[in-house]
Length: 525
Image 1 (cartoon, rainbow, N blue to C red):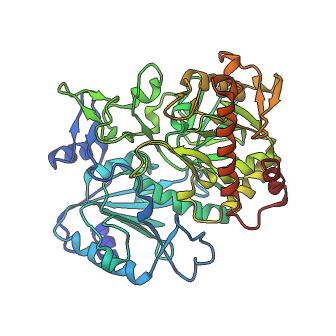
Image 2: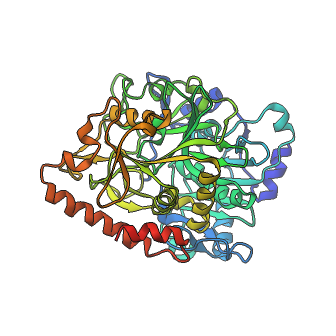
Image 3: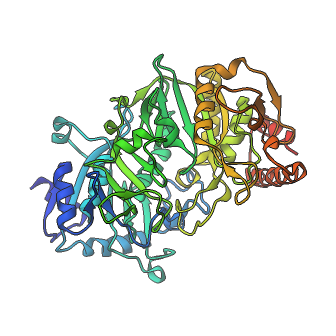
């Protein structure tokens, strides 16, 4: 009866049944009986999210309130919506839930208990409740007995906004109300909106406690040496951090406190297009009973066909982190020794790996260059060059320079090595060249983390001014300098300068840039 009273306090009344904190088995069973998905031969639950197969960035809003107005970095990624429009949508959303079943999951975000936030998810769909059950940190029985949510997320994919009266851009919406500690999601079945909305909230609150919130994966070696992998979806964070030789701390979202790094989540949300057992054995083996997969094509025998992008390139698998062998159970690690910025360069001109100074690291962190990979966002059909500050601008509520300043301070304090890794194209731009082999990238990443690259000779890239190693184990020498892989050398320089100009144009949009970052920018002109 207590949960019914708490739901009533939110305005949810006259609902049919409430299912709170169901087990994985029960959630899978409900999803099948309700026709939301089907089991595959691996035992995973496969769902199809319909029209929305990726995030919808133009449909994410922050309620513009006096208490937060001066904090938010307003613009095309943090779009304001009025309190009046929020209340209008909220009222109709509450009415929508009448006579419907409600699924509730209570959990935490943030493995370090000193900084964790309790979150209650209220879902229309049992399959989405399974998603949050697997992706967030599951409480103990004792923690559930005393559970009070710091934030509440209400998600109803079947409820659609009316842009003409609601002030939204489409039928879909993700609205974050920081003052009310409430998030509303509607019109989209894509599960990624659930986790990214909470990540956005963490990016608002964590810096206020002196914690750098980061869109990155993290793993740790046998000597407790932690490595961070920054990058947008599709650049390899999950794949490269899921290394059988190292233990996974987390695959997407972390905080960096005075004591070290900690995972925000309790699960993983891996892209699985072209997934193979040979290249990504840990992710492959994690797709089993209890895992939720999105928009994967299933053949007549009930087997997943990871090569088929019929619905989207952005096929996904959501599973608890313990499905990855030897993962770090408590989600906590030391201060990192190595940081890797991952970029899928569609121009094919950035080195496969290069070493950065602290100042260059801050510059590239603020730039956040990559190519958006097909399917990760609606409307993206082929890779497009983009700049996403902090390698996660769509989720960063504060000014990117605020996060960059914190990163620079931590790099200097803990003497962290930083590398820029191109997981994109070589031998030419997209459509002409080819994607660099995963085996080469793995070898370069391992060399960076192990310290092998501390003892090799470097050469300076003539345009981007980064240091390129001349040798790396298990990687052909000739690809380490990208110009060597291009047949038309003049075309390489023209293309590299074209990308350089994009960097410069992006940099000009920032105000009050620290002087040493200006000096880095000056070297690139």
